[in-house]
Image 1: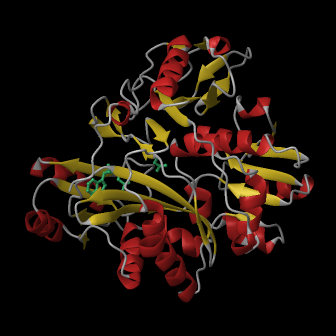
Image 2: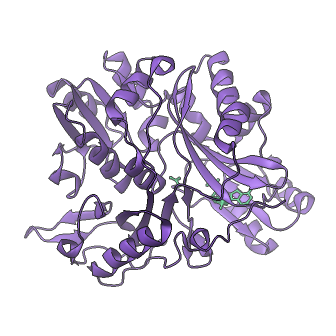
Length: 428
Ligand code: AMP
Ligand code: GLY
């Protein structure tokens, strides 16, 4: 079988890497891919970008792929998975109807309420007066979210009411702008990816992401600056509890609504003193958590994704995981998460030891006219390392990050540091 992966980030590089380790696959094709993915898979251009349905179908048919895996949310929200399935090709990714769980935070709240899933109390606002009332009703810290897709940057969490109001007004100013004001959830965050086939839920291993640009969780939110797995501090039974109270009820509710969920349900949680609460759902693998989760997966990836796409997860073998610890650190361009500077040469990648101990996954990279590898986006690379414990994995990942040369680059120095020191605690 051949597998086609849609996307061009480090998440897709991690997916392609995991697929390419599977000797049972004939080939892995990526569209559009990136210069790092090109080293392990055949890359096909997508002139219309990742939402170019006709381009995707053309590549899938030409390579006679047996499975399409859609990485990013935008094509899913746009109905790419519907089109691939309609063409008779198995697709790992939800329909446009099911992708609304990520495409609209207000819709996600409605589904959670119907399925009795624990989440933050929220007010959906469409006017300045409603916004102001909601900020006062819920109080500080204020959590203000753009209702629609915003690449992880639509959320402001602040004690400053003026800043919260300004962000809310900016969201309202968009066409059909809606803003969600939420109760602040206090507790460590966990990302749990659940493979779903419309009925059955198979959880992957949990990971923790670092959303803020700066050390100590300071500065603006980003798409994610680093991640690690496993979470030794997580309460016993966390995964089973989340599946029973959150993922399975949501999958059941989506099936009841005639929008069965096939793909990854990404459950973003806060572990509060009152138990796990949903912060957000995404309908695809998370970036950068996928980099560490798939690093530890020992079961061949293609067979589980195909089982999900074909509604056979209930019969799938239990997943096998490495006991080792994996850490990823994102190297971002100058200016990120604002407007990143691009076109800077990237050097030192040869000095990274390589898979499996420490390796580089590409995100915003490109080759310039002379074939030189240059930065081409906000998050440029995701460096991954594993070790017998977090200390060893962190040492390896930071040694590799230090080898990489990119003018103006930024990265966090404290990825997985608190966990290594045993300082992550769930409020009692
Ligand atoms: P989201 O895009 O909804 O994942 O939000 C981005 C980040 O904002 C999350 O990872 C959290 O760090 C933070 N956040 C979002 N909602 C809340 C909340 N209700 N309480 C506390 N922090 C939140
Ligand atoms: N790591 C956060 C996300 O993928 O949305």
